[in-house]
Length: 123
Image 1 (cartoon, rainbow, N blue to C red):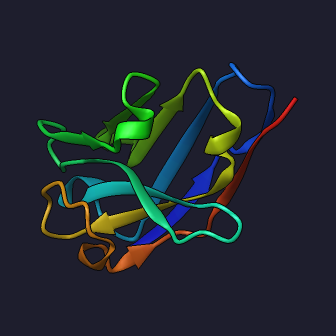
Image 2: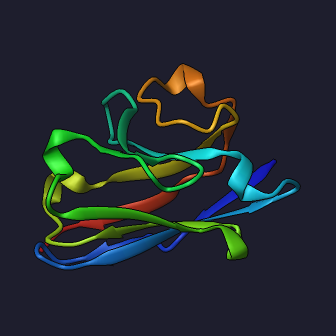
């Protein structure tokens, strides 16, 4: 499976962005999808993930109430709606696929990764 992340950009604090993760090579409904991010000088961390049937989701504490993950299996795309963005959300965001289909918070559960998309939150 190949993943393509898009939708990053530069916004002011309090702004919004919607990231998209488009899949090809395999129907997306076979996979759980996770979003991860890596800020400069920091380790990559899990942000959110969604099961293949969308019946389970996970959010790291720092984004709860601000980010929403969703998926459209017909379009083979997973979205991450990011509202009320903060400077500390600045990072390269990656999407990844977990063939087991369930929500997993460990990066080791995701063998397939897309390239990153840069999100910069700054005034």
